[in-house]
Image 1 (tube, rainbow, N blue to C red):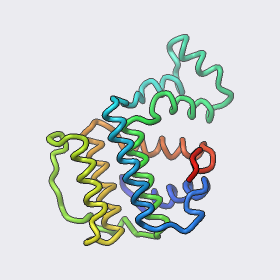
Image 2 (cartoon, one colour; image 1 turned 90 degrees about the horizontal axis):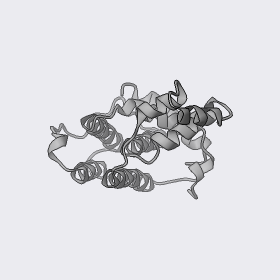
Image 3 (cartoon, helix red, strand yellow; image 1 turned 180 degrees about the vertical axis):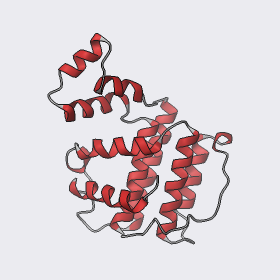
Length: 196
């Protein structure tokens, strides 16, 4: 992940177009949303919900099986095809929820106009993600995100960097999943079908 502020602006734009941040919110409110996404990643991991990006590619680009071809033919257009393929192959998986957490961090930075490109992550850390459980990594990320000794931009930057390294340790290309989730969110209804 390179240009944080550019991604921040895009994530914030998509979020506001879908009704988020229409009312004034606090930073703590946003943190609750971010930690919820990390909790959803934890639950997905506990349930063994892992993404299948190769099947999504087959559904969207070159369907091989009869079943995949029928799936493709039943969709009206490429947007509907992408949306349905994402629902079947990526939605609610560990990678999807980690990408959600990154997008929440980015849109929060957009709402509070934080320059996260210039922010130094709060402290250097050496973490061997594989030595720790999924829950340990979730808690470590949240602990640093909630650490009020550091300014908001540093906390956001730390959490994004942490999630990216954590996702990489799990074998996920988080940049790809963030991009896919952003495309998916653009096609969703207001509040992504939720109350708020």
